[in-house]
Length: 319
Ligand code: PEP
Ligand code: MG
Image (cartoon, rainbow, N blue to C red; front, top):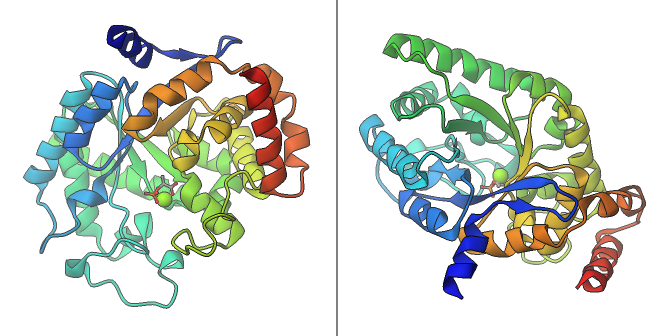
């Protein structure tokens, strides 16, 4: 029985109507990369590199970072690994960075915005990333992107550093879509980025103006709100034919939301390692085309509860 479960977890997830969906894992360090590989993940969809920088007195140097990234690539043994550059600010602060204290850190200098004042941090991280091999399986992803120019500037730095280092191959460079402006401008973003990954945790927070850390709002900050779903649809429409789109927020691991995301056209879901097998099982029982026909009606609903109720009914009918 364990062998059957293992075979199901590691084999690829194909919907009943024949769409093949990549189910990758979210990790915070290289130990979790082994867990992810063990879970049957098709790759790493999000390595939150900021965990390497937290809980210490100074930033990890280039060599330490490279070891951690290289170990993660080795653990996945040739499967794609998306490493996100430092996403510090808002809920995650570093004592040694001394970011200015502001009343609204979630709307302040965080993610890719940090590079304006801390260019040496980016350079060190890019050098460490360019030092791993094979670069063909490494994907670099930028957090908190609000427009294509931010991706273009990092690509210029990446080019310059790769040239300095004499590195010939280039890793793919992608952007997270977690700010409504990025979702609405997805077409231009997809011209500049090699792939997009929707961060539904922040996208929900910024679309609904509901702090993701506020326990009073936790039950209402739902990715299934039609307003958030419309931003996801805008992202998919903007990117269509230009670059692939994945989802790496918690919604990817929520069975009802995951099915809807696939029906809407998402190519990859990245979830906690412990959720990989369950999400693959969910995809295998999904008729994506049939659910896709309901998307316009779902988007026209007045709130998240109605969408969730409708998806739950379909889900139990299919069981
Ligand atoms: C997200 O915002 O959905 C995301 C995946 O990034 P994080 O949770 O690390 O902010
Ligand atoms: Mg985020």
